[in-house]
Amino acid sequence: MTGRASPGAFGAFVAEWALPVEEALRDLLPPLHEAPTRLHEAMHYALFPGGKRLRPMLALLACKAVGGEVRPTLRAAAAIECLHTYSLVHDDLPCMDDDDLRRGRPTCHKVFGEALALLAGDALLTVAFEGVAAAGAAAVIALAKGAGSLGMVGGQVEDLAAEGDATQHTLPRVQWIHDHKTGALITASLLVGAHAAAGPAGAPFSVVEPLVRYGDLLGRAFQIADDCLDLTGTAAELGKNPLADVALGKLTWPALVGLQRSLAAARQMAAEAAALAPVVVAAAAAIRPAARSTLDGAVALLQDVATYAVERRR
Amino acid sequence: MTGRASPGAFGAFVAEWALPVEEALRDLLPPLHEAPTRLHEAMHYALFPGGKRLRPMLALLACKAVGGEVRPTLRAAAAIECLHTYSLVHDDLPCMDDDDLRRGRPTCHKVFGEALALLAGDALLTVAFEGVAAAGAAAVIALAKGAGSLGMVGGQVEDLAAEGDATQHTLPRVQWIHDHKTGALITASLLVGAHAAAGPAGAPFSVVEPLVRYGDLLGRAFQIADDCLDLTGTAAELGKNPLADVALGKLTWPALVGLQRSLAAARQMAAEAAALAPVVVAAAAAIRPAARSTLDGAVALLQDVATYAVERRR
Image (cartoon, rainbow over all chains, first blue to last red; front, side, top):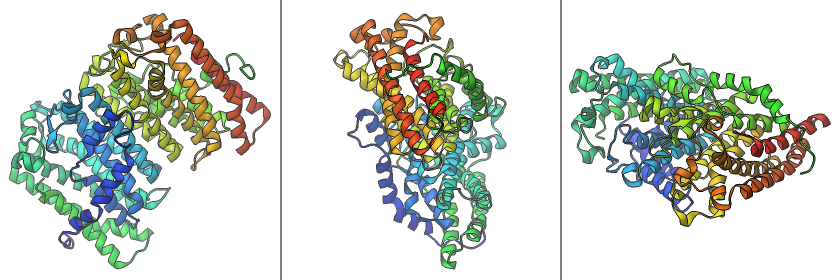
């Protein structure tokens, strides 16, 4: 790893922006008392209290890393959390993973019924694009591509198809599914932040290219760590049923190569992502010169989040 | 009605732009052979062959009516059809209307299964925003508001809630549901076209305001006519099961006031919409002066589509 991340740089960033992200989420959603109230209750139920808000944080972090102002990007960052949450609500539906526990509580359809959960997911996906519009057309397109049939939804489809089909249980296959199901939205979150920072024309290719490489590695490390946590974590730590992947016959890294080799691979990918941090920041600095201290801080942040992706407990 | 619409102005417009809309739809969707192929097959199955493509036509027509170029708006117009189609796919799911016939064929989930139909709908909604991004942030926001929890999805929720609940069977209630479930996306289609024509800043309030009033009336007329067709049309004409609304205990105008009074109300609303056509065009012309002949043509188009909304056979 080139350069040590300052310990806790990402933790401090999260502490600074956690509340503003929650406020931006509440601003983006219609209030609970607005009709149809039952629909808005279901949307709020799925969103609050939230999880790690990782994807909004990644958007804000990328915005800062490429020299942008964080505050004006809050709405677009919150929008990504709405999109992520819709994917969880739909994923939990009976016709999909049929899960009854999410973020430590009954899943949305368990509380509101299938039809309302389906529609709440649809509305969360829709409001996500209302929120990201402020970040410009490039951000809208990056989010749609990351979330669509060639990104996240494509990954969900192949994940379902691979369940219990032993012929598909190979490392290239699991990697393809991870890259699409999880990685595409993580990379898109970073791109939304970078495009928001860059203004109407969006970030140039010289910045997008290393950021996509960084995001793809971060996403892989994150998902492998997630699959390992599914095996080692408790329901209280995870807020969802552990061993859920095993029960569904899901295709995961640990199922293929074991826990220790999976964790080693995740750490290797996180280290590779961290090594790209100075490249991303230098590319941005070439366009928008900034103070040396700002650049160092940005590099440390991008490196620290890579470490966080594999060392977290939930 | 102020001024007679030239007969068939909308028909001629549709004939001119039907093929380009189909081409734009194919351009917007990933090709069938792209992975995951089964997902893309489901998306194509839901979209082709299509229905009337009314919403893209409305977007193109509004673009033209406010003095814009039609061709650059084709992608955004096609995007609206993707969004409309997602709503049909999700509406037909077992946990919603549980319908087995759509556009004259088995519904998407009957052919591809529930999970894939759900995800194909999600992907169609997502790609809609990828497509509309080219028309600018104002168009993205208009589409998201029209399609979201305060628009179309909100209407779907209340429509489900009203099924079989006799206490809700009042004219104000059915109008609220229509305005949201159908009207919001029809008005949004017009707004997308107007915003696309106006460039990055979007169309000004002076144009948006009369266009929204026109769209809301058009949407009401269209939906009442739809409910009447459900009673009088055949499966072959409609491409879906007639009397489906009756079977579901849906709240409709004809169920409340009968067929003849419903048709009269629809015609009255269409006439009011048509009366607004010169107001819309004059507002646009005040900003972007155009030749007298162009303006007359635009007024006739907006008037003719209002007539079409109530006089069509499917």
